[in-house]
Image (cartoon, rainbow, N blue to C red; front, side, top):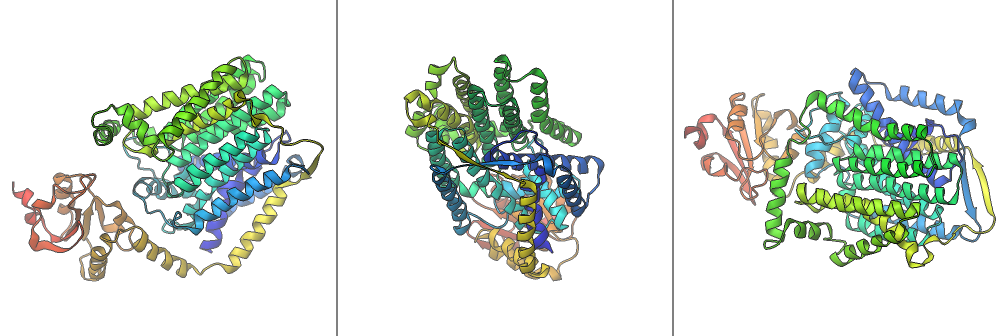
Length: 595
């Protein structure tokens, strides 16, 4: 059953759950589908908060049963409009086909790894998911939001097994799907050139250059996508406000944008900035009397409530919001000395975030976005200027905090690229080409019923073909050994793994390599000591009669390079590359213990 429940819960919490959120306005299919994803993630987050706050685990099938009941009750009110132009539907189909091929490409190449195996993904994000699946939470000393770990925890609860990571990891497929809908929604807003250039940027940046980190379990690409969903939906809203769309349609598109703004803030810290941008944007609409203060208040609550609930969760166990900030600033300075030894941190930061896009290309993006100044009297021009200013503010934030890795600055593109897309009409090109001309065919589809029936059918087929539980668990253990460990780590740890039956029950292995925590038979025996921490090593060894140390003799970042000279060569079990395994050890064996 793990395969069936794992796949179903992954799709349910990321795509289907939001269908119980009623809408009183008819929206195009692109907006409805994107809204269903946003609403699903939003409701999923509050399920996580509810179960954590009250220390309860609601059975998955009880949640599904309540969802079906609500779908049936409101079925007659929820419909989707599907606009198809005989002349131009082929263009839309072509865009979606290209994006679909990109998604398939991710899975067909080595860009997709079936389990979490990257540093932060296993040491932080999936660690928190496993904790939340048990209604516990042990954050680091800095407030890293946990939207996706929360969703993964719901999947682990549904499958009643947090040791199988396949389906939690699979849920990340929602990210390229969101990108597809963003292109579709630009087409809907009649921004043909914007959709074309957006397709190129998304295809190159997300699905070609950075497909692996997008699907690895890091939060840098997910927060960028959530922020970009917010900003592009704001573009559609402002376009609609200038075209005079109905109040109901405008409000519902703004509501989906507010949902993604709230989700951005609980994906990673940088996402909080998009809430400020969103609130300023709708204040512009209030000033133009496009929406009223009552709706402004509702949208503000909608986008702020996920962040507020997360902060309450965090402050309950850890009152320090910025505990590791000095370490990050120090890392930024070290990277600056490597990238631009004779330059400033601004130069090294610019080089980092332009590394794969290109310095010239990034300059062109900024130059095009600056043309929004020409349209400062229009709503769309004001929005473009706001995005551009925010991109510059974001760059200075990146410089003064986190310019030690390019991925920490990717989210800046979530403002810069939409600003550029808003400026395109200034060039007199086909930016506002009305893609949908002539008479449209309009179909009313009972979307919840259609989606539910299709999903049940697919899940039934998958369930009938699913692997037995023993086989899937065996495959997962093999993947942990082959994908979590480097080629230098694997032979040494397998040697220790083979001798585990002969060891005492209280044996431990101390290492800064957090992959060891998740290896079969290692988890209860692993102890983490980061950096060179003799006190940590002493403390852990006092509680055990048999200790092993697994260290790296080269890399100083988070490794025990400085510890290696104090370890007795007589206790060296084996070495592979720069990896060393020592043991069994006692406190008296450590040379630094005698100083």
